[in-house]
Amino acid sequence: MRRPFLYCLLSIVLLLWTGAAAADILILKSGEMFETRKAWEEGGVVHYFQNNREVRVDASQVERLIHAPLPGKPATPQAPEPPATTPSSPFSPPVAGPGPPALASDAGTTGFVELKWGSPPSRLGELELVETDPAYGGVEQYVRQPRTDHFGRASVDNVYYGFWKGGLYTILVEVSNYLDFSALKAEAFRRYGEGQREAPSVDRYRWRDDPTADRFLTFDGKTKTGYLWMRSKVLQKKVSALYPE
Image 1 (cartoon, rainbow, N blue to C red):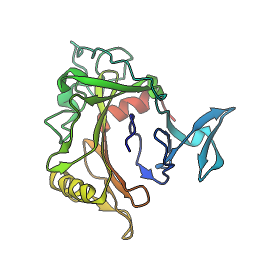
Image 2: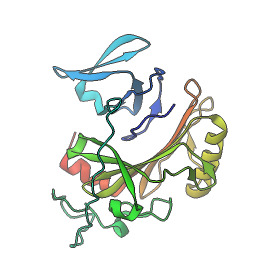
Image 3: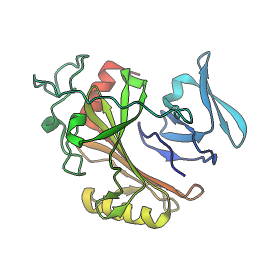
Image 4: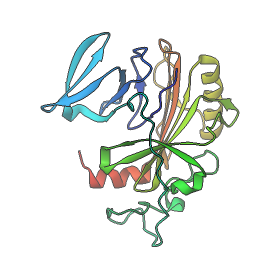
């Protein structure tokens, strides 16, 4: 059961599965992530369903609210934007505009299919736009066509790519069973070194010392779903400068 959307921000902890064919995702600034059949904001309060009970949380505690596309309404692909012609330093003040917010070489490598953070969508070849998250002025979510079914040696269900101002900002790799998660974890450890386990009783790991990217790996036994989430630190500094908390 797959969902045509993704991903991101801060550390992801998957706590809930509603069993719906499409669902909204609520990510709190604390790092918790809830998947719910419906979430909405009203009067500075975000409402969502958990175990068929309506829960409310102050909007100031919410990092991102991602709505699933409506059933039967496919996303309209958009032409990828060309890379900026004028290089910019990752330490220069962020300037709004259509070009990538940082040179790919400045932002470091992703450790995945020879991509660099900050790369334009054109570097990934043929893409399908899944949705545009309105946060931070718009983060476009893409999947490659044909869809990627491997992350190195691991079989995966989906790989989602998030672009902010035309630069590669986040990557989310998704699996739907523990066998594939074990392979994904082994591949992540091989590429990035062994992550720090958050607790002995949970499959949840963070890479806190990586200079180029935030990385988080988790598996939820209730939903049988696992994720490897990555985000560019250079681009995140630019996002934080433009959209301070």
